[in-house]
Image (cartoon, rainbow, N blue to C red):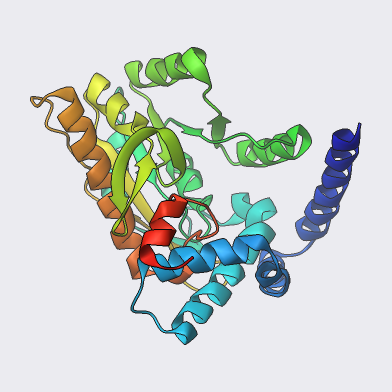
Length: 301
């Protein structure tokens, strides 16, 4: 009963937030979100997690640099929350768009019939912009995600994403895996985030520290002989962004499968590490990505 009450209160709070920010224009929503997150974020336990992650990954940063990154991180996350109801209005591929893109010619390869890819990226800036850009370009793609525990909140966000073309599903067990394979077998594409903790994956270095990493992107790319297509994102000021599409990662299909998986995961994590290092203030540091032993070994706890 108590958990139901908490879920109901959580839903009411979310509806209040969604209603308020939906009525604001995107710039004001972004600014208001940043203001709120910069105030409340440092008071949460997630702040300590983020600080430990940053200190571990960038041991040469001064205390001032770490605090500046933390403040900028909350600013970015608050903006993301404020912008979420407005992501269908960024003017993708239109004049005066809020989203500039490099490497569009690479993305356009997947407009051809039966030419799919496994898109892989991480939680950069407002990461919701990347799948929106893929589907707004016309590339047939479904996005995997981790469903929220609160079904009401999950449905509201799913509906909002669907309004600008982003089809989401949370693969679970054999049925979820089969759906992924059917999409790729039909020449479609799938997109997934590769920087979340995944206890049954493979160990691979991220920013110099090993962590368990999802190997599904590599295994699926290997099975269907598809490229792994990376993307990255930077916030260029306020609710404005730059999406970059790199040349894809091509696996060596002649090698033994486990060697391919390890090499592929390592390559993706190297890509993520490089992009995080370019703009550490725009990364999602609050996730408990690394095991506590990594924190202990780095001397941050």
